[in-house]
Every structure is written in C-alpha cells, then in structure tokens.
Image 1 (tube, helix red, strand yellow):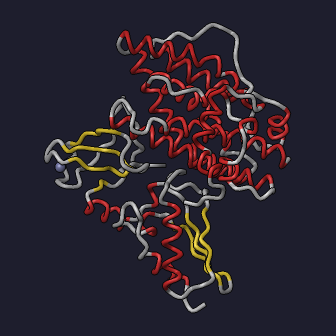
Image 2 (cartoon, protein in one colour):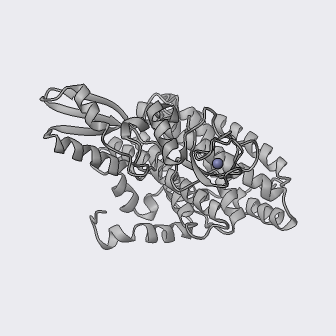
Image 3 (cartoon, protein in one colour):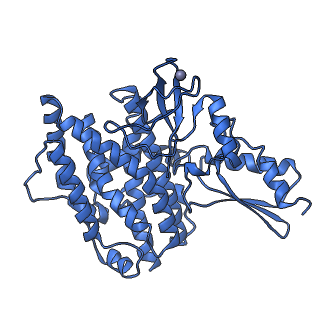
Length: 250
Length: 162
Ligand SMILES: [Zn+2]
C-alpha cells in the first residue's frame, strides 16, 4: 500500500509543483498589475501544496528523501505530472484556460480527499481546498469574461480551449495504483470526479459562449513519465541551482 | 521545567508576525498548542496558506524566543489539520489590524472576483463602508486591495478564509 500511496502522492505533488512553476513565470509579465500579483499568489499556493505533498511522499517512501530532494533531484522520467500542467503559458487566455481546466478538476478531487482514510492526505486536502476554491472562482470568471468578451478575446479563448482539450483526458487516468488506493478508502473513485469536472466545465464554457472541441483523440503519458519536450526546459530552470551547487541552502 | 504552560504562552505573545508586525503569532491563531512533555517544550503551529513564505521565519522566531528564555529542549511542530481559518484571529488581533491600517476579515467569505458583490469592508481610516475592491490579491496571500471612496485612501483587507 505504501508503494501505491507514494506513487499517487508523486502524481498529485508534481501537478502542483509544475503548474506552480509555470505560473511563477508570469511574475513581472502579467497583463495588469493586479493579475500579475494574482498569478504569483496562485504560484505560491501551488508550490506550498507541492511542498506538503512531496514532503509526505518522501516520508511514505521511507528512503530518507524530503520535498526538496524530490523536487530538485529527480529526472524528467521520474516526474508524474499530467501533460496539461507543463504546457507553456502562451497568451493570457491560454494560461487561464489551462488554469480553469485544472482547477475544475482539483476542486472536486480535494473535496473528496478531505474524506480520505489517510489522515495526512485528508489534512493536506483540507488545507489546499480552501485555496483551490479561490483559484477556480478566479479562473472561471476570467474564462467567462474573455469568452463572452470581444471578438479578439473570444477567438483567443476558443483557440486556447482547442489547444488544451486533448490534455484533459489524462487528468482522469486510472491504473492499478488508483484502484488499490480507492479500495482502501484513501482516494475517491475518479469517475465521480470526472462527472463533477464535466459539470463545471460545461456550465462555465456555455456561459463563456465557447464551443467544446469535438475531436476525440487525446494525449496523456505524463502519469507514466513520458513528457512533452516542455518539461525538460522547466526542470533545467527549476533544478539548476541544486544541480550546479549540490546541497546549497537558502 | 522551570516554566509553566501559561508562561510559555505568555512568551509566545511576544513573537510577532514577520509580515504584519503588529500581530503576534498568538493573535493570528498560528500557534495552536503548547505542551510540556517532561523537560521538553512542544509548540504546535499551523500555516495560514500552504505556500506562506513566512512560516520558516515564524518557526525560527519562536525558537529564538525559547532560546532567550534559557529553554534548551524544544520542538516547533507544524500541523496542517485542522486548517487555519481567519476565525482564529483574536479579538485583540482584529483591533490591532485596524489600527495598523489593515481592514480585519469580515464574517463573510469573499464571493466576488470579477463578478458578484465583494464583501462589505469598512475603511480602517474613516470607517466608511463606501469602499471598493481593487483586487482580490495583494502583497501577501492573505490580503486583498481596497480603496475608500470617501477618504480616497487605498488600504489592504485581510481576506476571509474559512
Ligand atoms: Zn476612508
């Protein structure tokens, strides 16, 4: 069970870490000052969540690794984040769409995880859920404003949706790890989460006057450690200091 | 142990939040518990937000305070549950926030970001409720930006988290 829990925590923690890193790239580049601050606030929340989750993953693994070891000293193939979160920021519409599709998944997930039979998983979920509610509110309102905005903003938001849609299936990836944890009451059934995600996505996209892409094909090998070329660049930047100066302390 | 639990709580009331230096960690509700286990002092704290960068400093400041009282055997433990809420900011803390120019959290969870009505927040300078939210996000994770339409002063609002 510990090996399964470790695997699951790495997926959960890597999603937070990588999207947090992507958001931090907006620092100093936001379209307006308030949004710059909002995006970096989100980044901080996600990196904070990653810290709690990976710290616990290290404990569960029992090999003496802490959150920093897991974040800074693993290689690309050891990362288990979904491909969605490593997609480049693009324009503001793309970043917000990525955020919305992800937040709409994270909220029901954390809600369900607060009832986990694992005490620490429940504690992390309870803490993260409060932040996630703010995030989802923010990203959905931007999607509505941009989609139902000007011709230009509508076009860009629709383009963003068309670009990112193929990565959403992977959020609901499930294998024997998930099944074992679900049976132990540690994680919820992913199909329930998907139902809620679809409801939120449909409501918001309809209000935003956006059209759901109809193509059925999807990408998604991130949970197996097969990433797009984007992750390598992220890690090169994120891990540089610990690779160049092993053991460097703040 | 040369000190009682009450005395240790008292010491902690002199440790201030690094980002809002008028509030103590006790006012803020970050200190959850003090235990004396034989000769050891165990202080339990909880973060306001997951990524609160001040947590490490708070931990060190508590350690420094205990050191300065000649306590050698101590542990500062961080717990995530139950999750911190602005309800834990003490009455004294709310008054101090306002005097410092930060509007204390209202009872209501902030529902507005781009749409919807923002919470009614009183201007800490002139007490007018004719105020306007400039941004849901501010200089730290826990604050939003407001402006008073009467005295025209900008101010920060400690946003409600429940
Ligand atoms: Zn005023």
